[in-house]
Image (tube, rainbow, N blue to C red; front, side, top):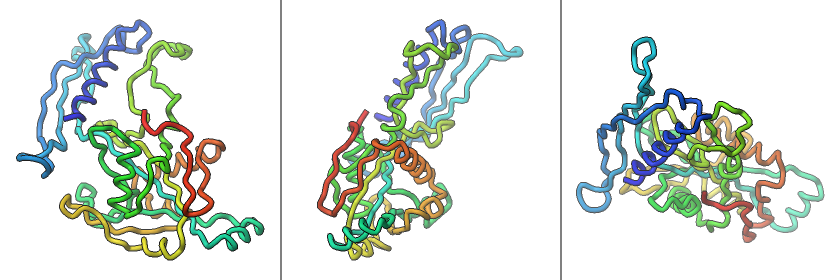
Length: 295
């Protein structure tokens, strides 16, 4: 299971950083004593019993020193599922070149919309949970390629990988987690973590890069997306699309962590200027990426 291997490799590497004298836990380092793998969940794909999808790891992580007579320890229950990718889709209607020029001349604010998927989420106790389009990463770790697949499957829009912009990577690629006792240690040592959002790091290994797709399309095509039913039925997906004004997205998708995080990234990257790609001027215009998709 790639998710287990990647998680364990990252944990072992970051535990090893405690050997550095400046590490906050150097004097009393934590050690991974044991891992008990439990509750495997198999996906119905491939030869029986299928593909291993989810797994629980119960870890014992302790330090050798005693704290009030007891060994110091860290919570070690981990739900292993691997990475996912979420996509903020921002659409600006295109009303023809003449109308577009008139809007520019009059200084009109762009009219923007976003797309949410409405689908059953049993873990949330809901049959109509509103969220950004998202999906699990495959073994390749190709953020952009997987995002394109999910948009095709869940929304029905075909996109090129070059149209997608990795907002998570743009935000945190130069920000490092340094468990050091010295604030000015520079690049002395860094933890290995993904340049992504971690929705629930207290109990789950899932990391989630948030991508941006900006599209221009005619109003008829935009209207056709409203209430469209999509999803892969053989994988238990029953999805209905909802097109919402962008200014109300924080309300319509306010229960979805992906949506709120993507909005925060979008608004702040936009404010810094020169980071986010421009919205295409017409439906046929592609966009250039500003940073690499992966890594």
